[in-house]
Length: 121
Image (cartoon, rainbow, N blue to C red; front, side, top):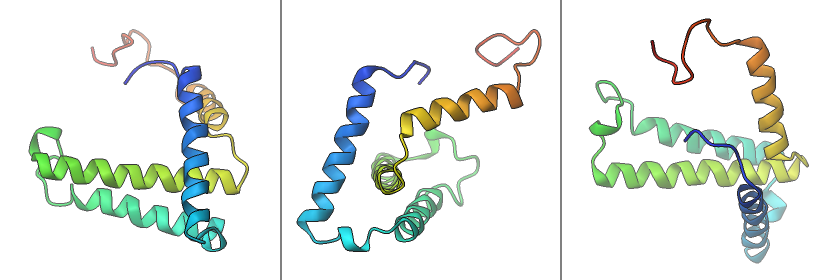
């Protein structure tokens, strides 16, 4: 996806933050959602994403059947939800942090001369 984030996207991040807060509070889980625990849980979910690709020849999307695609989608959602909760606990504005990091990456990794925006010659 090659598009700029919109106000709607920011609203969606705030909505996810509120929903994850409410979900945890309704189950009395907020007490366990320390930055350490959230970071560890997120790393487990990332490993669960990787597990689906572990023995595939290339890991190309065409190698995933419909059930595996659905499982990967759900694991990615888990990663995102833990990320949103961790950012919330650390008072990190994810949108601002992502823009800041992309700016730093653009300086660290400048575009190759003569390479079109699509990235391939």
